[in-house]
Image (cartoon, rainbow, N blue to C red; front, top):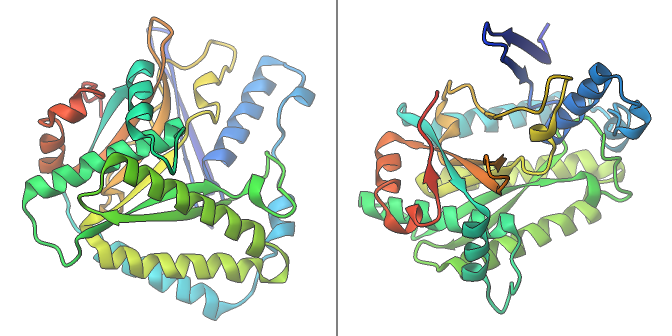
Amino acid sequence: MSVHLTIQINVFTCGGVAIGWYDIHKVTDGTSSATFFKYWAALTRGDFIENIVQPDFEAAITAFPPRRNPELLQMGMANNNGCKNHIHGSPSVVVKSYIFRSNAIAKLKARASSQQVPNPTRLQAMAGFVWEQLLVVSEMAGDQYEHTDTTLQITVNMRPFMNPPLPRGSIGNLIDTAVARAGILASLPELVAEIHGAVLTTKDEIREKYHGENGVEAVRESWDKLIPMLSEYKERAYKIVSWCKLGFSDLDFGFGKPKWMVPTDAVMSSFHKNLIILTDFTDSDGDDGVQAWIFLDEKDIKSLESNSDFLAFASPLQPIL
């Protein structure tokens, strides 16, 4: 029997506390984890839970009824294994984090604007910029690839776009993936425009297809289209996930808000390569920024940190993992 959630709490002699957790991505996503922890924290503080978004274990099951189709499940498992075996085979994946302060993000948003996207969001501007910089690293490596274009996967929360929308507290792996495609020499505004269009298309598909009797099949079809594309683009297939504004940085179990939230235990698999995770960051002066956790080959991390354009906006943190 598999364990769906494991939590470890460490109390240090200095008085500090660290809470770590593992969960199974098949049944939870970032929003689910945030909902669970915020509810747990409210209970420990003795707050009125009526004012807290409560975990809802029924809505997702109603929207996507469990299916007993071995052929469907085996197909998904086979594709997933193929993805892990063939996309990112490097054993030298490392993670480094970088701080983007509010003034740097404001400059990026202005730099990323275009006629198609005159007012890019913080996520669009940061996703486009990091994607652009990773393509620079790829070009610096001098590696030869079959394709002269690239893809970026952007995780999309299904809940608000379902028809009807699912409750905010719905527990489940309720995410879809938007895929933006661009040439490797595309400018930042062009990359942001591709991200904007891909996310809009995915939201429309969720509204139109992910409900009723065919909802499960629609999700599976989306996944099955994604896997071959990732295998095709290999080293120039990137993915970004945002945990910003989910509430992890505001968790208070009665002894104050966390000083830091780390989205990895540094146990790397090849599947982590080319992943970017964005989290909230507030410095000692109260400046609200974003912390970007970037998973790359070690040699590519060194190339990234030698890029003056990247360092003009991002401040590396000393590794703690």
